[in-house]
Structures are given as C-alpha cells and as structure tokens.
Image (cartoon, rainbow, N blue to C red; front, side, top):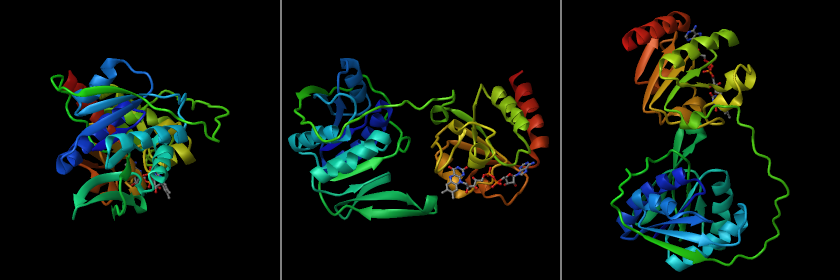
Length: 318
Ligand SMILES: Cc1cc2nc3c(=O)[nH]c(=O)nc-3n(C[C@H](O)[C@H](O)[C@H](O)COP(=O)(O)OP(=O)(O)OC[C@H]3O[C@@H](n4cnc5c(N)ncnc54)[C@H](O)[C@@H]3O)c2cc1C
C-alpha cells in the first residue's frame, strides 16, 4: 500500500500520481489521508485524481502540530499495512515526515525529485549541490518514508467516473510537550508566482528599478503575466518584493511560459524554474548559461529587444 498525506490538496494530487506508479509496481493501492473535517466532495476529488481509497481522519489534533499528526499517520500506517508513505514537502510536511519515520523506526528521504524501484529496493533521486548533481539514494529500511516537493509531478487527469472507497477513522492522539504559543501569518504582498501560468522574469541586466516597467509592459501584452525576478533584483537591489524571487532560495515555479530577461542563468536560479514548460531567454551575451535551459533564445540588448517584442505581440493580437 502507498499512503499519501499533505495538508495541501494540490500537492496531495501530485503525490497520488507518483504513488499510483509505485503501487502499480508493488501491486498495492493508493490510500490518501485527509486529517480533519472535509465534505464528501473533497474526498471524491482525490478519488477522481487516482486515489483508490481516502481515509478522512477524525482526531483531536486542532491546528497542525507535527507530533500529533505523526501519531495519526503512525496508526494509519499500521492499520493499512502501508509500505510506502509519501508526504508533501511543504513547511508542515517537512516537520511531519521525520517525526513519523522515528515513530516507525525507519529512515526518511526528503525532497525526492523521483522515486522508483531498482533491484527491489525503493530508490530516490534528490537535487544536490544546488542542482549541479543528482544524488541517488536507496532506502535500506522499511516502511519507506519520503517527502516530495510541490510541482514535481503532474496530477493525473480528473476522471469523475472513477470509484473509490471513502472511510472515516477515529484516531486517538495523546498530548505532547509541544505547545504553539502564537501563529503569525506571513504578509503576502499580492503576487503568487508559484501558481502563475506565464512569468516574465527580470535579472540584473536591467539598469535600474524604473526599467522594470518594460517587463511589466511585456507581461501586460502576455495576458497579464506575473512578474518574477532573480535573487539580486529582490534581495540586493530591492527593486521588487521577495514574493517575486525565483530560485533555489526563492520560489519554485512551473509556468507554461517563462521569459527570462537579463538573467544569466546561474544554477541557483535554474533550480527554481527548470520545470517551466517553455523558456524564452533574452540576453546580450550569447554565451550566457540561461540559453542552455531555454527553448527559444534572443541574443540582444533588452532595451532594444523588449519594445520590438511588445510591438510584435500587440500587432499579432490585433
Ligand atoms: C546559496 C545561494 C542561493 C541562491 N539562490 C538564488 C535564487 O534563489 N535565485 C536566484 O536568482 N539566484 C540565487 N542565487 C544567486 C545566483 O548565484 C546568481 O548570482 C543570480 O541568479 C544572478 O542573478 P542575475 O542573473 O539577475 O544577474 P547576473 O548574473 O549579473 O546576470 C545578468 C545578466 O544580464 C545580462 N545583461 C546585462 N545587460 C543586459 C542587457 N542590456 N540586455 C540583455 N542582457 C543583459 C548579462 O549578460 C548577464 O547574463 C543564489 C546564490 C547562492 C550562493
């Protein structure tokens, strides 16, 4: 059995897609877990996206507490006899997975970019050295606990004719020493690059903050694309808020179209946008590494290229 958990339904769907592949190999089922109150439709949604079973857990967990959620999953692993446990690698999942692994007295591989069986052992791939290398690690203990970052796998297409079992489980949890004193929501300043379908991204090739308007104009022509940027533009120059920052230490994105303007394409930037469907790079240096990650490249001065590109797109749109 493959047991799936994330507190984010979109990540859960992505994990189901990978879980299904692994379950097909082991001959088991994919069981998704929802902790807390949900309506029938939310559970059905997971069935439509490939889950064979959904367990909706009724437990006195209150707000997310990693040690209480680990108790819940520990009991479900035993009850379902699950061999593989996939957990979404967001903030809560990262805290939860290793605690669960300790309870199960097994190992935990975090941030897996791929998982497959090799010589009968589950094998994980992870990005190492900022993406310069792929670490291949084999699990040596069971059950296998792995975390998977968001947007790593595409969810299976929704199929409303799929049938599956939805069960409700009451799980007892005990109080632990962990107390949450205060939760402060991070202020979101208005952009969500992670869900954007088109991103126009600005690098240090821009001479000053005001010139970002050119990128905004291009974004306007491209059906209101979202503005992204490289680290120096947000962190050092402070031309854009950090919500726009893409890369290893920024946001990981997966748009249909990523336009990189005046971005050199250092590995730490590529780590955040490498899964983009189509990449267009504009750079005056024909040897810039960004061209290696681009589907289309324009070698030229962005101050000459952008106005022409905007005109051409607007003309095409009529
Ligand atoms: C631990 C660590 C984490 C990091 N995390 C991130 C991260 O999350 N995201 C990130 O982006 N970086 C990150 N970095 C920084 C990264 O290594 C690079 O320094 C950064 O991505 C460079 O940004 P850039 O491409 O905008 O600038 P530069 O490398 O300076 O490139 C500017 C590019 O613009 C081109 N250019 C200049 N003028 C023009 C013009 N007029 N027209 C067209 N092209 C022009 C140049 O040819 C050049 O290729 C990280 C670094 C470290 C060490």
